[in-house]
Length: 193
Image 1 (cartoon, rainbow, N blue to C red):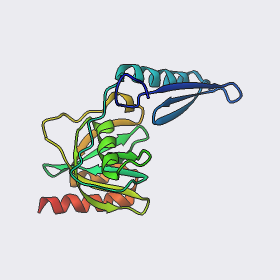
Image 2 (image 1 turned 120 degrees about the vertical axis):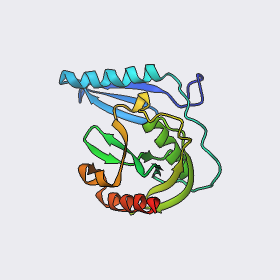
Image 3 (image 1 turned 90 degrees about the vertical axis):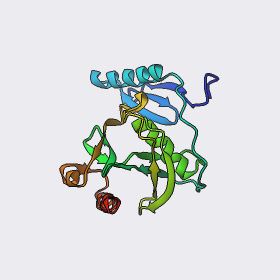
Image 4 (image 1 turned 90 degrees about the horizontal axis):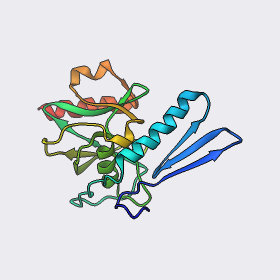
C-alpha cells in the first residue's frame, strides 16, 4: 500500500510480450489491455491518466451502524423522490450501484464503497433488503441529499452515466440483471405508498 494515503491506489503495469498486452493493476481492479490496435493503447493511457488524476482520494469511512458478513458483491438501493439511483455501464446496461467485495470486507461496507466509487455519493447502508441468487447483497441506503450524483474519476471506464429513474422509465432501459429489475420496480412502488 502506498504511503500517500489510506486508499489502496497502487498502479502496477506489467507488459506481456507474448500476448502483446499490458496489464494495469489499479488496486483492487485489474485491466488487461491489448497494445494493438491503437485504440486499446488509448484505453491503457486513460487508466493511467485516471489514476494520476485521482491521486489518493480516500474512500469515505464505512458507516459502522450495522454489522454484516463479507459477500462476493453488494450494492445500494437508493430511492429519493420516487426515483431510483442507477448506473449505466459503457455497454448500455443499467443496474444499481454496486460491485465486488474485497477480502473480509463486510458486505455493507462493499455496498457503501462501490456506491461511492460509481456515483460519488457517501451513502449510509441501513438495512439488508435482499440477497439475490447470484450472491449480490442489496442494502437500503440513505444519503444526505446535499451531494451531487457524479461519477468518480477512476471508474469512468466502468460507468458511463449515473442518473435517477422513475418507475415508468424502467422499460426504456436494458437491465444488466433483468430479474433484479422487476424486484427493484416493486420496491419503488412500495416506497411511493
